Image (cartoon, rainbow, N blue to C red):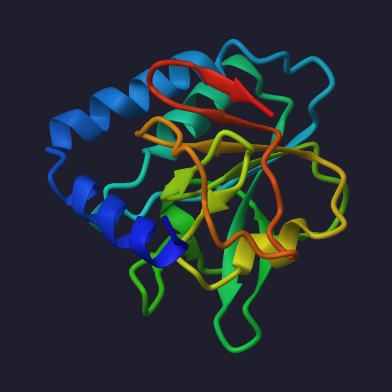
Length: 186
């Protein structure tokens, strides 16, 4: 299937999920995430969930990290839709977030971070067995991850597709993807 076909199909599958299913799948993703080795991780870039699109609830991950690994710096993105680039802000709590024009929670202000990032949790709609992902099609994460030697882990409510037909040379492969059932490594 092509990315366009996959986007349409997976968006439809997500729309059918109840909020209880989203919450349950998010907890299962966190269960797998919590088994990672965090001993050498100092910074984690974490996307914030778009609740209207029934994305994984990464606030569960943030809360877990703050409780279990308070020394890890959590970074969240702020998108510039004119340049299709992101800035990374130190997460300072939910009170400092507001929705942009696309209903994406972002830091209203705060500390911009431009240092090393040890782990990136990558949003996606779908992924395949080779580690390629289908996002929303704007390329924010592919641009961000280009040339970045960090561990890239996707979060998906659904198991992998056999193959994404139209992978582009600029598409960045994931190192792993967590689903409610297991973690896939590539």
